[in-house]
Amino acid sequence: MKQIVRSIVPLLLLLPFFGCAQNGDKENDNSEDMTEQTDNLNLDTATFGAGCFWCVEAVFQQMKGVHKVESGYAGGFIKNPTYKEVCSGQTGHAEVARIWFDSSIISYETLLEIFWHSHDPTTLNRQGGDEGTQYRSVIYYHNDAQKLLAAASKSATDTSGLWPNPIVTEITAVPTYYPAENYHQNYLNNNPNQPYCSAVVGPKVQKVRKQFKHLLKK
Image 1 (cartoon, helix red, strand yellow):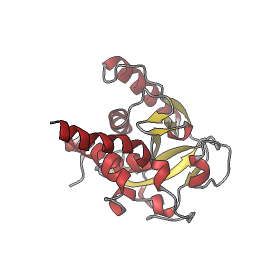
Image 2 (image 1 turned 90 degrees about the vertical axis):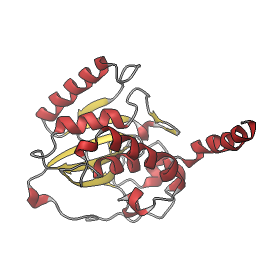
Image 3 (image 1 turned 45 degrees about the horizontal axis):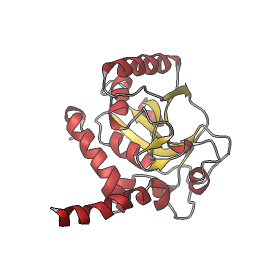
């Protein structure tokens, strides 16, 4: 047993160094159109921040009714920020995922439920080993209806006992949004063996798949 513990402890100590910010050192390659167009599909839009956007993207990509998920930046004061700039924590931007979804298949309320379960909304500016305002928990609402639904969902979740501590998630009007660089898009699917994906993103996705298996795409 002692030998097993000795082998596990070094791996656990290394996990903080597998953070989202330590693995995105490719050069900036922003693109105005990185994925298929959804303008003509009459879809609704949601924008969430819940730690590293690789995790948020991967969680919502698997849900039926979700047509597109894009990693990006929002909430800061720097125009057209780069990943390196956002990771500095000095831009005011949060890593977010923008979600285009068919509300006749999956509702905004259901997306919010998945949001609350897929990250810890009680830790201020931190998710696991990822720490800084860029990893804050935030709901950017796109209209008054989303604002009301988000506030009601937050209140209900806060009193449900899902999390032992108070929820600190921001709920605010959607600001200017900037798509992240191409190499951040579809990140888990393109980089399944990357250390952060293996240690953090993959396990988080599997947890959500078990909790919401009735919502998964076939």
